[in-house]
Length: 395
Image (cartoon, rainbow, N blue to C red; front, side, top):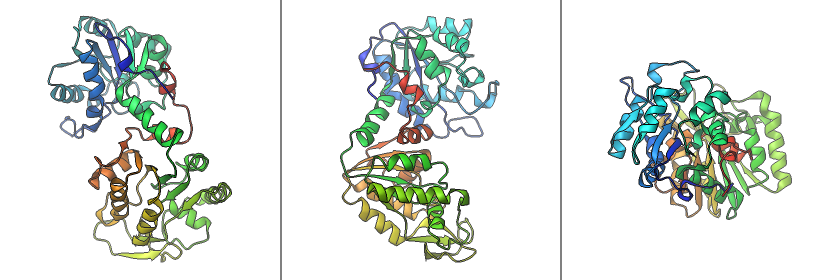
């Protein structure tokens, strides 16, 4: 993945159509509750302004499914972006049409217009050619900076890219590509992948692909209990996907054949309910008591995982080690995050939950890179080609 970037094209006086990811959480009052995604897009937007581009921004928010849902308007994002840029940001009444085209044409170099939610039109998610053509009418140059939707072939990231040239990566997208290449394509070894979260089913293809590419796979979170069930352990009331135990066993067999260390927890913090203040105990993963469930990796597992990471040069992590939203079950995730933050290894963190966990541990500024994509990050790990990246001009 070596793509041309916004740094490599002339923007002066051109309408620069930038697909950003402003799918931000809003408060009940209709203001932006958490603005990380807007902040991560700032370098690209500022670069376009500095280079004299007439900036047209496109994004989705939520899933309005082709309907005009007022609660999913990008108005709060326009207001927050204006504050962050320190200049006015216009909000178009729609994302296509003559009125919108007139607003885009009237932009002076350095001015910014945010289009209304592209998913107000059903043609966005179906990559409808007519809708893509209507968006392309607003652009002289196409920039994709929305890694979070790069695994979707939608009109605003793929359709427009095919109609408008040059079509290049924004600075955020370029960073995503660079760090993925450093972690997976040409990594410094040994490489460890840490996978957590609740379900094996959502990540089995990732596990399978990683066993061909890494030296160690560490598995935590609820998904570990499907592996334990496959090994014949008593897992109590822990989360298990019974239909995935054969798949888990095949993954363990493949790891052995490949000479990859597949490391599972040895103990767990167990409780009878996922609630604050519930009675907890540290249990062996081989014998979780009836009525109890494992909700975090235990202290011996934290040490085991840290020891396994001691010699690695590259770490990729997706998914928490337990129900980290509850303080009683956050220790494993937080301790692992702190260890990775203090490590000299290249560390690439992906997925919303893992991002939140790293922030909760206070080490967001110590890891090498936090990806902005959940599904897109997992599909890259799986070895898939992402349509939103594939559509961009090669460097």
